[in-house]
Each structure stands twice: as structure tokens, then as C-alpha cells.
Length: 238
Ligand SMILES: CC(C)(COP(=O)(O)OP(=O)(O)OC[C@H]1O[C@@H](n2cnc3c(N)ncnc32)[C@H](O)[C@@H]1OP(=O)(O)O)[C@@H](O)C(=O)NCCC(=O)NCCS
Image (cartoon, rainbow, N blue to C red; front, side, top):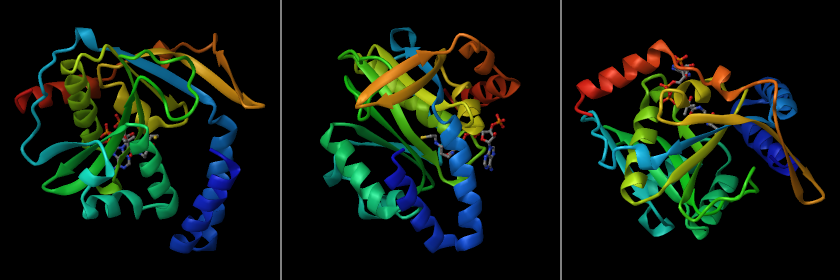
């Protein structure tokens, strides 16, 4: 994240929460920035997935949005008002202009979370070039009151199946190693670890270093929760 973005986000945080929490949040931000270039990259071979839509428990609905004109006002407000509205609007505009898709997951009609995907390219420099049939997952979020219910898992599973049906061959994503909730959520999905990586921007060039000491497998190992979640989702008709 650029320093200007960091400052702008802190200013928005200060308006909402005041000085004390902003100082604490800045500390967390600085610690994360120092570690933020340690990422786990993961991939999914979509040719090995069932290409039918995953069934969802009845309160959940997923919508794919491909442009501003398809995005309802209430959803737009939900997506932009919870952190830095100005930057959120800019991101949405830039992403739709780059033909990215926004996937919304709703629970009983209320926006519960979202994820973005983009095919054949990336918005920001990536660790390797994308092929025409490759899709990148980026910027996913579940609103705090919906967390811990595997909502993100349902969303990702649905997106992967939908992309497989469209003939997309591979999906990629990456998570910062400090982000335990994201790691926990992704390790339940059909994604597999590719490796750990650090990336640096030097004079406009991206330098990528794949880590040798830590394997993705060690970080991304399965969990009891994975088996339970998959079993309960199947009971819901998947
Ligand atoms: C990562 C995220 C999308 C996961 O969504 P989710 O639907 O809550 O996912 P899960 O239900 O699978 O929970 C994942 C982990 O979140 C944590 N969690 C569980 N309940 C939680 C709650 N009520 N509040 C916060 N975190 C919770 C747990 O660590 C859980 O893992 P574990 O129980 O297996 O150890 C969500 O936490 C989020 O939006 N985080 C902030 C945004 C972010 O980090 N995005 C990624 C970078 S773009």
C-alpha cells in the first residue's frame, strides 16, 4: 500500500474512532507493513473441479456484478461506507474499467461479504504473468457480524465452480502471512499452496523472491474445521 493511501485510511479511521484507537491502529499498520511483503500464493486447477454451481444454504445468495451500472445503490453504499469511501469508489471504478468482476454474497438480502476476480491480467503488478485463462482472486471481505460462519468459503467455492463452467483453467490468490483469518478460510477451499513469496518495488520494477525456508504446505495444512465445513455444506445439498 502506498504511504499516501495509508495516511488517507488513517484519517478516515480517526474521523470514525478518535485519536487513541487511531494511534493503536497505526501501530498495527506499521507492524503489518514491515511483514506485509511475506505472502502465501495459492492456486486452483479448475479443470479438476465440478463445473456445476455449488448449492447454497437458503438464506445465502451470490450475485456477480460486472460494471457500475449493475451495482445497486444500497450495495454500493455498503461497499464504500465502512472504511474510506473516496478510495473505495476509486478502486471500484478502476476495477470495473479493467473488466474485473465483483461477487457479492448476501444473507437474507443483506450484504454479508464480497470478493473480486480478474481474468487474464492483474490490477497491480503480480509475482508472475497471468495467462488468458487464468483468474486472480483479490480483495475479499466478510462484514464483521457475518464472520466465523464460513460465508467466505461458500463464496469462494461458488466462484470457483462458476469460473470452471466458463472454461477458466487456473485461479490464483495470495494472502499475507499475518492474516490468520484469511489463511484459515482459504485452507478450507479447493485452493492449494504454491509457495511463499516476498515482493519489492524498486524503481518501478517488481522483484520477487520465493522463500525457501517456509513451504506453503506447512502453513496451508488442512484442519478439522475443513472436514466439518465441507460435510455440513454437503448436508445443505452441495
Ligand atoms: C478473512 C475473512 C474473509 C474470512 O471470512 P469468514 O467468512 O469469517 O471466514 P471463516 O468463517 O472461514 O473464518 C475464518 C477465520 O476467521 C476467524 N473468525 C471466526 N469467527 C470470527 C469472528 N466472529 N470475527 C472475526 N474473526 C473470526 C477465525 O480465525 C476463523 O478461522 P478458524 O476458526 O478456522 O481458526 C474475514 O475474516 C475478513 O473479511 N477479514 C478482513 C478482510 C481481509 O483480511 N481480507 C483479505 C485481504 S484482501
